[in-house]
Length: 330
Image (tube, rainbow, N blue to C red; front, side, top):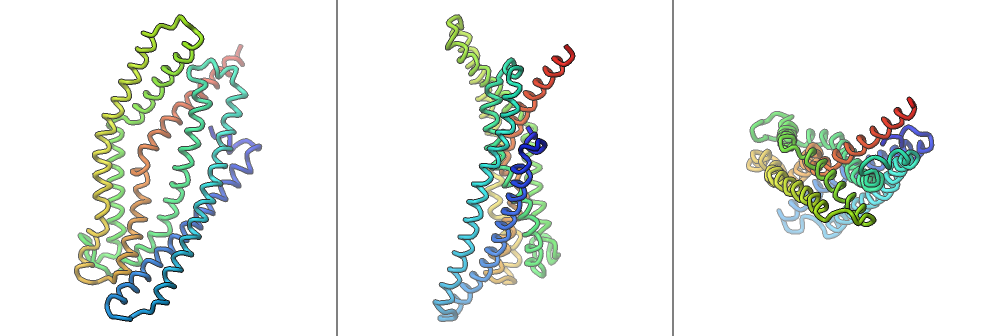
């Protein structure tokens, strides 16, 4: 799967492409930081305007909105280019995988579900990596940029439970987000979600294979097809039940998440220790830090699917390598 990074044919796309994606994401995060600063300035201006008539001019108001439009346009432009380039980058990764599978397909085709591995699982792998890969890197960059901002904004502000401790808001975000993530990871392991997804794909592959065989072989009995579909039905129902339990915890936590910043800022808001602009900056920075640390939590269903695809492809490659070793000995 990782020959994309080790074979010279793909060096330009793999390594230079990675550098382009990383630098583009860094620019995107920097623009996001500027947008966060804009929120603080804009809401302070709104507070000033609502405090007294004509405290600001209409020109100042329009100028502030225009500055946001410029920042937003820059952010959208970079985001669209990153998405476009990443799609091409990951298709090349898929092409590197498929090229090797094609070169050994005489051996690979003997393995059950070979066609599905080469066609369906490689495209799943590239699509999942497209959504998860860039979002993971962006989450790490957001943490690097926004944690110092959150710390700077929270100095001297009373925080629920932590009082006047300067690190209270950051520690609160860490406890809330990491605690929730660990809880749901444990829940996912208890419910064996990766194993269920893996079993589901295997049973679907067996069902698909017998349907293909039945097209050319009239001796395949409908009963055999029905039995395999019954296996598919059973594993799907089990998957729905397991995800029902998991989603109760996941969705409840994400809903409670909306109030977390306001809970920690309660003493500061009640005491009037922050302006409207600073409060908006803190809440947005808190949300960005918290969201980055909750990456695994939010992406959990997709991570389960990726783990299942990786496991199938790794098992497929292992069988090919074992066949090659046997042929060499012979």
